[in-house]
Amino acid sequence: MRRDVFQAIADPNRRAILSLLAERRMTLNGVAENFRISRPAVSRHIRILKECGLVVVIPQGRERYVEARFDKLDEVTAWVEKYRQVWEARFNRLDDLLEAMKKEK
Image 1 (spheres, helix red, strand yellow):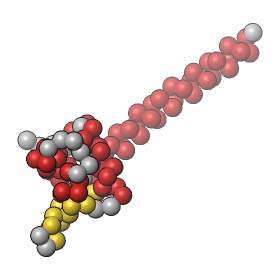
Image 2 (cartoon, helix red, strand yellow):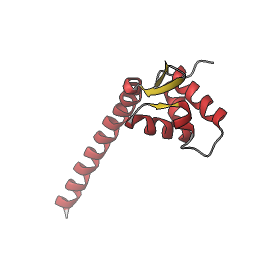
Image 3 (cartoon, helix red, strand yellow):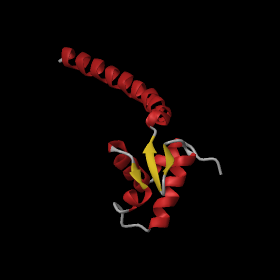
């Protein structure tokens, strides 16, 4: 199954993992210690984040470190920006209408 960034950030556990990794890279066990879900569940979430390009797993000795790669979130930013512009235009029209209504009074 091909996953995208939107699917990755749709889950609150994956967003929480990304928040943790925003501060620093961590071992897989270090990430898992921050959650009440099982270690295999955390590993599945990390696998999905890896498939989407939001994290990389770096082997270092016996440990495996997970590091965030936020450049893939540019897709989300572009999508949100498009709708921000639409809503901004709508609010500007509403402001104009309200100003016109004030002047009529």
